[in-house]
Amino acid sequence: MTSPDPHALPLLEALHSTPARRYLSTEPIDDDVIRAILDAAIRGPSAGNGQFWAWIVVRDPETKKQIADWYREGWERHYGSRREQILGAPDGGPMSKRSFLAADHLANHLEEAPVWIIPVLLGAAKSTNPRLGSSIYGAVQHLILAARAHGLGATLTTLHIGHEEDVRALLGLPEDALTMALIPLGHPSKGRWSEPKRRPLDEVVHFEKFKSN
Image (cartoon, rainbow, N blue to C red; front, side, top):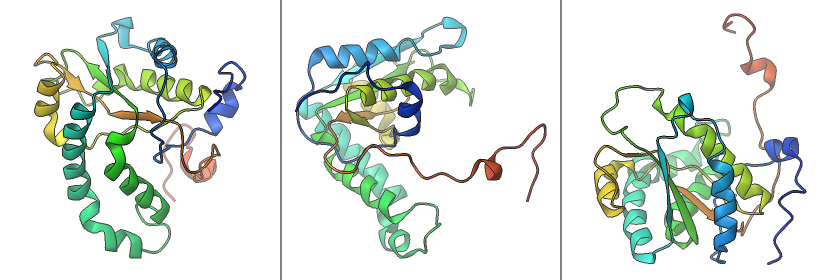
């Protein structure tokens, strides 16, 4: 597959056309592309410029298979066990049918994505600060947009966290580290780059104070 010119994608176009991509091919991704994506990620905002993070690149099939099994436990617990309920719900429910089927596909094919990126916050495991993630999620979005520029799909997932300690041990992380996401990367195998449907601005934006309907 011919890779696009990552410098040719206008920023605002990328911001408006980077939905979660959950159908990913097994086509390999070159190391230099992964490095370029991560080099963009680490330019993202970091609280106090502390950069208390690590970025784990996972390619090993055995590691991915083990974590994917744990991920599927989380998927089944939170969503898969409600498959009929979700698919039978009217449009406008908490999860659309299309989103459910895409997420279900990802859960069952997670280890097939050629590369995973696992962002980690060091010293975070015992924190009680609910806003701790702000120290890395801006950088995660940088990563996803950089992947988009290289023609790669990505999505931010967290369903592995039911086995956080096991994942930490498997990846050799310090005891005080916390995984903040699992991001599978791959060339999209289904769907297209398009603007995600969102509620109108007037329904979600409030000026000065929150106003209930």
